[in-house]
Every structure is written in C-alpha cells, then in structure tokens.
Image (tube, rainbow, N blue to C red; front, side, top):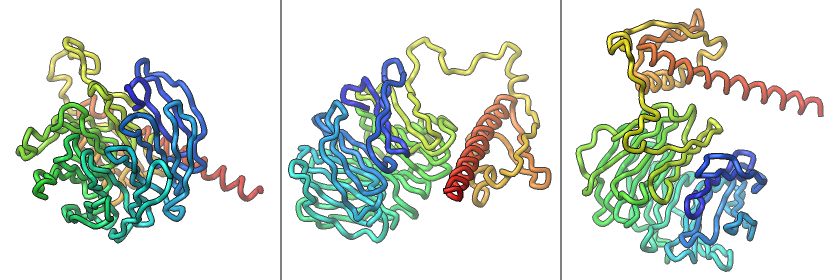
Length: 387
C-alpha cells in the first residue's frame, strides 16, 4: 500500500512497477523499475521514501512520486529477499542468498556492517519497531536476533524444521511471528524468549504473514497452495488455537507471495504467483455480498453427494504433486474425495456439486497455466536455436 492507502504498488517478474487505484480497484500505471525480477519493496516509516530490491542484488531508492533517487549493488549479485527500515528511518537492513544480513546508512548509501552467522540463504529480515534488534530467518531453519549496533547475535530460535520464509514483529514489538516451509506459524514473546503458540492451519508451506495494523492479536497468512487464513491469538497470545478464525481456500491459484493491510485495517491486498492481485474485506452490516446464496430446494439437494471426472491429459503428475502433496492439499481445502486414474488420465471427484465445481475451476486454471508456461518455454527455445 502507498502512504495513506489510496493506491497499491506491485512489482512483477519483469522488474516492472504496477500502480493500482485502491478505491476503484482499477489499473493506473505501469513502468520499468529493475532489470531483474522484483523481490521486495518497503516504505520508510515517515512515508518519504520507498526501497526496492531485485534478484540481481540491486537496491533502489524511490521518492513518493515513484521517481528513482539512488541505486546500490550488493550481496555479491545474489537475490535480495527482504528490506526493512530502522524505527528512525536513518538506517535499513537487507538480506540475501549470500547468507548475510547487511546494515546500511540511509543518507550516505553506505554499508555499515555485515552480519554473518546463518549457514544458508537468508530469506527474510525485519527491524524491531522500537529498538535496535533485527530478526532474520534462513534456509538453515533458524531465526536469529541481532544487535544492529555491533552486529552480535543476541539469540537463536530453533523452533522450525524447514526454511524460515517470514518473520514479522507486531506493532509494540513484544511478539514475533515466524512462518516456515514446515507449514507452521510460531508466535514468540521476545521479552522472555518464550514460544507462545505453534499454529497449524496451512497444508503447504507458509509464504506470507501480515499483522493487522490496529488489532494487535490479529494477523493474516498466505500459503504456497494459495490458501488465505485469518488468525486471532488473543490478548495474551497463548489461547488454545486449533483452527484459524477464517479460512479462504484457493484464494489464489498459486502461492501468495506477499500481503499488506490498508492502514485503516478494513482491507487486505494479496499478490500471488498466479499473476493476480486481489483485495479482501469484510462485508458491511446487512450485506450478503460474497456469501453463499440460499438454496430454494433445501439443504438436502445442495448436500447431495455426486461423482464426476475431469480429463488431465499429460498433466497427471502436476495434479498429484510431489508425494501427493497437491491433491492432498486440494482435498483438505475443498472437503472432497479425489483420486487420479493414471491409466485413463482422469481426475475422479466425489463431493457436492458446488465442491466439484470449485475443484474443476481450480484444476482447470492450474492446467491452463502450466500449458501456457510450457508453450512459452518452447517458443523461447526455438528463438534461441534460430538466433
């Protein structure tokens, strides 16, 4: 979100900015920003500047009018996955696939220190909202807390069993959220280094997290399978939470890479690998928009179980996924029973008619995207041979 929340700024794989009207939800502008694919963007706390990074190790400063101010090459040309400003906006921190966290001086554009200690790619970093503490998460499964003043490691959290993809401080800085490829979200109280909750709601890896800007116990999370979850961990953060407050299965057709709340907290924007940006909000009182329509024929007909099939062609493996992960995730999200007949190359679906329609829509979108990507690779290969 841009300052004030009236517009939304997104970056794509071609290194382009896209500006959207957050009131009418319409497209406004597209412009070239980086020579490689976007990895991160963040506004300063005073809303005077924007920082962006790409997959070639380049960091750029931008003015509020989206005019370029400064360009820096860093992290030995490796992708820079995350950027975060200090509370005073005089410094910022970056992390990348060179396994380092780097602290920068904003005014001089100079690197002040390199924080080393992770054993693999560093995927996420965020500066504490009130102090000089930096949190980082890495492919080595660890979360580290650093002192930005001298570069020392204050503590290491060993709660995850796979790559840590996201870290996020809440507004008062007492709680730290971490998300991982082990499908878990963990909540820590940083004052006593205690794990308050381990949240199990995603069926594939956690790819994005965002605290609500007003309610400090509420946050949203997105997964690799496109599922969007809403959580409320309570005022003490240790409520016995078995399920998220709300679940939107297949909110996107592919991974939700990033999400951002409107400053007023009434709307959430999500960006996905399915090349779509979506806006989400709660209904106004009395509104039925987006809710299931009542069935005049009664619940019996709507709950009647049907069996249907869908042809998969040469994409059987795509629907099954690695070790059956894709089809298992889809069954959990839609409440259907599914089976792939690999001899006939069809997907067998058992569920209500509405559930079957949802599955067909999602699988159809997945197969269409895979086919278009395959055709593009073939064209690129043909062009390379011709040249």
